[in-house]
Length: 337
Ligand SMILES: [Zn+2]
Ligand SMILES: [Zn+2]
Image (cartoon, rainbow, N blue to C red):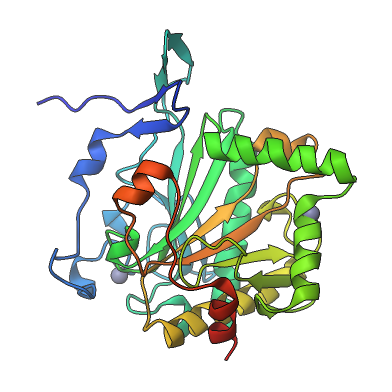
């Protein structure tokens, strides 16, 4: 059977885009359905050193001076996703017909391999290694922002089978796409309204009020703040903001990277302690490329650290609402201990 080309589609009443990527069905899947914990088979892992030939050729790597591209010797390695949700080679032209809208599934899907070590997770990595990964996040985000076909970039990390990871070796993914997600566009519009009302970035105000209040704080230093949001959707959900007004992760300064590495590790280590090493997602939240390059006064990037301790089920799917059994004030207190 012929595999169909990727396509982006949406029903205009609903407004949400869906990516159709039939090739994703052919991904290798390392986890046995019955396993709670990922089996660690270095032998089969395409992300381990020595197996560079099992991924497409690298786009970028931090590696020892004498080592060669697509060979061992790297600390962080970036490759195209072999089974990308979106792919290059075609031009996105949005077409509308009545209530439907669609276009070719064009874009970029990259994998950042966080460490050469198969079994190490972020809380176990040296701060310098986490900082290196964050520096690579920054440089890939900056590179994709210069691609005229990319209107929105989503960076995320899935740790554990329940968080959507198909391979256990620590990695991050970046998807650059030709459309802006409906939820992001809505939040941008609301943030703009708030700024016009008060004259200030609403996120900067939010950060100041959480810092003053204190009871939902998880960790902070001179550059970053992590707190449990007032309306957390998930138990032990944490939101992490730069305290300086900053629209894009790509604008993070060198001296801020080590601080960010430390605070992320602090939150992950606390989660490991409080919630028995749960699977989790780390999600970058930022506005579209155009908004950040245009009027960035109400765009302020952040990261969400979302442990998977509950299921998204019928209620959430039907309503877009969530049921959380841990108040954020309690979550913050537990995570601070
Ligand atoms: Zn591996
Ligand atoms: Zn701000």
